Image 1 (cartoon, helix red, strand yellow):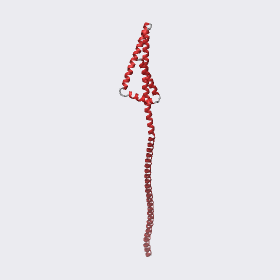
Image 2 (cartoon, one colour; image 1 turned 135 degrees about the vertical axis):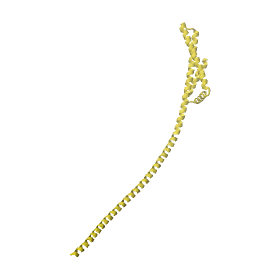
Image 3 (spheres, rainbow, N blue to C red; image 1 turned 60 degrees about the vertical axis):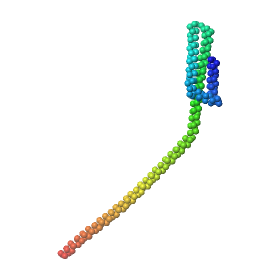
Image 4 (cartoon, rainbow, N blue to C red; image 1 turned 180 degrees about the vertical axis):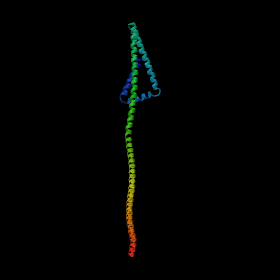
Length: 219
């Protein structure tokens, strides 16, 4: 019993030492532990651990009972002392086995997580430049598209400005033509007024000439 427990403890210590340093045996040990944790391996390990825990609790309980008898009797016989030492050694070794097994499990878990994260970081680093290049290319294409759109808007604005300028020139030409036409109308109106005045004067002179001739005859 004791030899088996010592063998298990030394084996667990050796596994911990192998996992603590990066050696060729470390990869082999990790592969073995990975296989142990697959399928029914975890169930078997839990069963063995539960059995060891129950036996350890039994040894602790036996030590408590022996100590209680010592208190009640006030003395301890050699047989009970030997049993006390035996149960104490068993409980200590079993506790050490469980503790080292937990250490191996946690160490294996952390090493595996570290390897996964390291691979993820390497993948991210490899994808980083490619993503940067593709992202830069996309940005350049987006900027080119914006430049093309702005150029089209600028051409449209220039065309609209040219159209408005032509319309303003045409309106200004129409205004000049209308002004000249109105000036012509004013001149024509002045001329007509002048002719009208002349005609009136001629009529008045004509009306006055017969009356004058009539007066001369009477005299």
